[in-house]
Length: 148
Image 1 (tube, rainbow, N blue to C red):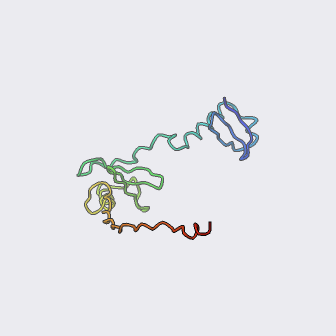
Image 2 (cartoon, helix red, strand yellow):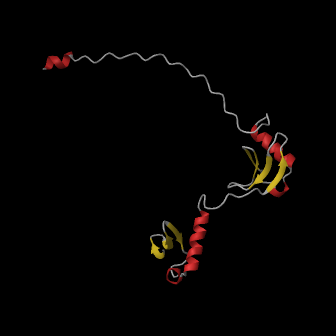
Image 3 (spheres, helix red, strand yellow):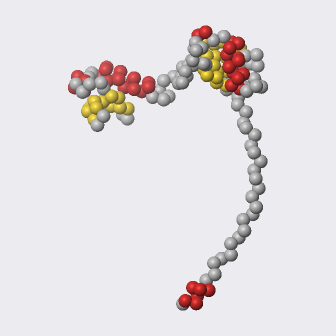
């Protein structure tokens, strides 16, 4: 069941637990079923996980160490992806104009000088051994017993 109303934050359409805002108050009284379903579908598609993940903008080819190098769209701008390594494209570089060699340079820079995929964990510092804590002697209750 689809319902429309005016709430605390303005006019809305509701279906189940999904609320979608309407642009004008008058639309609450004139909205049809098709328009309500359209507004709710737009709201659901905008949620995380609601839309299918976007595919690559461009497939650049195979990396010499194996695996495909791709230019992907991202939340913070386009990036180059190879295996588990994601390298952000500089703002002056157009995603459509990226070559395989440029992408491999970005990936190598991101992955470190080894040129292998993935980040390496920083070596853990040796844990300092603490001296065993001295046990405290229980508080004397002689003064309390004397007062009784």
